[in-house]
Every structure is written in C-alpha cells, then in structure tokens.
Image (cartoon, rainbow, N blue to C red; front, side, top):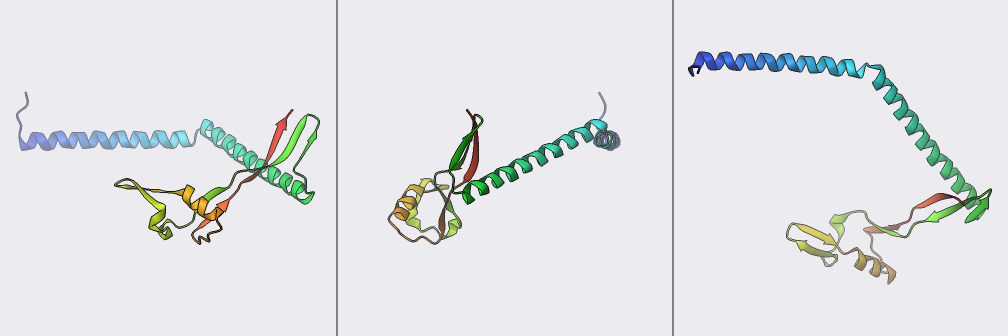
Amino acid sequence: MKELTTTWLISELSEIQSKKLEYTNLIMKLEIELEESDLVRRIMKWKQLLKELKEKEIETKNNGLKVLESANIEKFESNGVEIRRKVSIWRLVIEDESLIPEHYKEEVIKTTIKIDKKEIKDNLKQWEIIDWVKLEQDITLEVKYL
C-alpha cells in the first residue's frame, strides 16, 4: 500500500488530470471526425428534405383550405377521396395568467394552482366579457381515402 504523502497526492492528481485532458482531446477529435463523416452529412440531408416536405404539406393544405373557403364548400369527394374542412372544438387560451381573478383559481396542492377553465367557459357562454382570455379553433384540411 502506498504511503499517503503530499508528493504522492500531487503526483496522483496530476496523472489523473493528464489522462482526463488526453481523453477529452481524443473525444473532441472523434466528434469532429463524426461531424465531417459522410453518414452524418447524409442524415442531415434527409432531415432537411423531410423538413421541406413537411413545409410543402402545410402549404398545400393551406392552399386547399383557401380554395374550399373561397368556393364556400365544406367538403367534396372525387376518385375515392374525401376532402373537407375540419374545424376543431373551441379551445380556451389564457393570454396572461397574472390577470386571472382569484375566484377562478382553485388550490389543488399548496404549491400548485389549478385554473377552473370550465367556469371561465361557462361565464363566456353567459356573455361575460373577460379581457384576459380568448377562444380559439383550429381549421385543418382532412383527406380521407374512401
């Protein structure tokens, strides 16, 4: 067993630090090699192509929605495919939680406050004006193959 001395401790720590530096440098070199590899370039290329296709899909669906809206058509069928405007149910969106009055808040756990959205929606149905909230709906284009 080695004797615990200041010299031994400093020597041991110095050796550990040297190895850590060496290993860190090796990892950095491998990471650079990996980033420059053909495989990573190919993966990045396919990710970019996938992103472009998703953007094109969104644009195409938005153009389809515009066509249906301008023609005042909810849906149509052709060649075994149904195209229609799909409107989601209304969703309550709280724009600024700091403006919510206390009577809409319910203490669930001492550290958590739950917002009673049902009560807010009910009050909106009664035509109460609430400045800090709005209702939203999503409208999407749905394609069904019949």
